[in-house]
Every structure is written in C-alpha cells, then in structure tokens.
Picture (cartoon, rainbow, N blue to C red):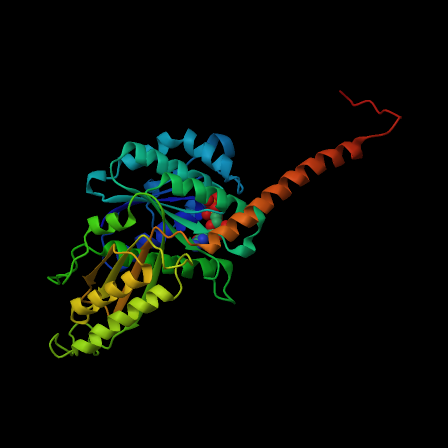
Length: 387
Ligand code: GDP
C-alpha cells in the first residue's frame, strides 16, 4: 500500500524521517510521497532523510521560524492560514499513485497538535483517498499543558481523520535512555510496525507470492471510516543457516506443525503484549493480521488459526488476515491491527488530567490578574502613571 506521509511538527517530521530511512533500508515502496511541515526552522533543518524541497516552513509572518511554543491553538490557526503552501507541496506528489494519506504528529506539542487535524480536514475535502492520522500521545510525566494539548487534539483529530492510529509514548522509553536517544528508538518501533502493516499487499522482491494476500483494500476496509486503532507486534528470529539468503531448509523440509505453531504463538504475543495504545482487545470492531517473513515460514494454516483466535478475542467477525513474503529476512514478524477500539482507559486518564489542567490554568489566570492589581495598588496615595 502506497502512502503520502505528511509529518507535522517535530515528532511528525522525525517519524517521517525514520519512515523514509526504513523504506530505503528494506528497499520498500510504502512512502510514495513525503512532506515535513513545521513552524520551527531548526526542527526542519534537523531532519536527515526528508529532501530539502519537501520541507515546508509555515507561519513565518507570525512566529518567524521559531515555533509556536506548545500553543496548539496557534498551531491550528497557522495551518489554516498557510494551507496554500502545504497544498503546493502536496501538488508535487503523484496522488493518483497513492492509496492513502497519513498525517503524523505528536499531540502534546503545538505545531503538529494543532496543525494535523486541520490538514486532515483539508485533505478529506480535496481528495477521495482515505486520510489516516498517526497521533503520538505524550508521556504522563510530561506535564499538564502537554496532556491538555493532547486531549484536545485527540478529540479533533479523531473527528477529522478516517482513522486515528495511536501511539502512546508513555511506557515506551526504557530507563536510562536520554530523551533524544529514547525517541529515536521509539520512532523505530513505530515505523517497524506501520511498515509491516502497510507493506502488505505490495509486491515483494523476486517472485515470492503471498499465500493469502492482504491487499490495500483490506487494510482500508479494516481501518474503516472513523475511529481509533491500536497495533500489536511480535517477532521471532528464525535460523536460516549462515548464508541467510540460501535457506538450509526447503519449504518441504520445514515442519509444518512448527511453522503453524510459531505463527499462532506470534499472533498471541502481538495481541496480548504491548500495544501502541493500551486498550481492551475485546470489543474492537475490526482486526487485521499480517505475518511477514521468509516464504517457507509462512503458512496458511497458521494464519487461519491466528485469525480465528483473534475473532474469539475481539468478539468481532470482521477479522482479516494474510502474509507478506520477505525472502531476505531472517525473522518472522506479526502485526495485529485492532481497529475501532473504544475501551481505552489511557484516553480517559488523559482527559481527566487535561480537564484538571484546564481548570487550574483558568484559576491561576484569574488569581494572577487580581494579584497583579493588588501589587500595583498604592492604596489611598495614588501614584499617577507616566502616560
Ligand atoms: P511540535 O513541534 O510543536 O508539533 O511539538 P513536538 O512534536 O516537538 O512535541 C509534541 C510531543 O511529541 C512531545 O510532548 C512528545 O511527547 C512527543 N515527541 C517529540 N518528539 C518526538 C519523537 O521524536 N518521537 C516520539 N515518539 N515522540 C516525540
């Protein structure tokens, strides 16, 4: 499936950068168009893989290239005002070759948090292709304003996009990692999952043909139009001998039971392990299972069993599944897309903290107006102002 990816803000740009790097490294073809949009010049300059002419600096008259300082209302206004510049960059993408748009942003900041929902709304109005969002939630230690931004952006982004894929930064940073180093490894985790998902249905290298193909329309149907998604992932290294490429085993020699069991256990691990957005699996509206790896390790029976198990877990009859042969890989990876999830305690928690932060900000604003008046008050002895 081919995507036009627009990275909005710093997190959006960095995830897009990683997408391009990953596509190049795996000789993939998921990224058909790429644009990074930002109000901060320095953030755009820091990107490594997004070509220079694919970087759009917006809001120059308002913030002079310095960013919006976590003000997402300003981020949204700037996106509205400068949509013409963003559209000019999109005009250079061969959109007839694209299956969907993906707008990526960190929801806790300002530029992407405010701009991404505005862009999603615009794209939906102009194009017939689906418009998906990838929204990154801030860690719970990031503080009230980031949580408030994220909760407001989340609501708006869900409303404007055909589906919002969510990644929760909370709990993904390993202890001892620096913030920057932590983000780099988190971004790789995000892209690995999305790349396996969206690669499905693309023609693999050589003549490796999928046993049960997942095509773009199955991904689109699983994502549906409206709602929130979470993604599970699990991977298992397989021993293909020293050469890697020339398998020691022919397909016939591999034990069918082993390959089937490997796939079913990977499906369980992916679903019950760490999801990009922690949520209750039961009640997901639809699901899609993609198993990627060397063709001799992919079998229809394993995928069928995994699919049936997912039907039981979700309680949904709309569970699709298929494989994606990657002859040069030495691991089998499984991605489970849970679409239309609604039982998400993390979002409720985010909203509760956001409401508290909003009340606190309002109270302090009122108080500080009164306190300033008191500070300047000289009592009965009036001091005249200079002018
Ligand atoms: P913006 O540039 O104003 O849109 O804001 P940022 O994108 O810098 O930050 C928004 C939020 O995104 C932060 O609160 C972090 O939670 C998160 N964030 C920032 N950079 C990254 C990144 O590279 N990867 C991930 N996963 N999250 C990030």
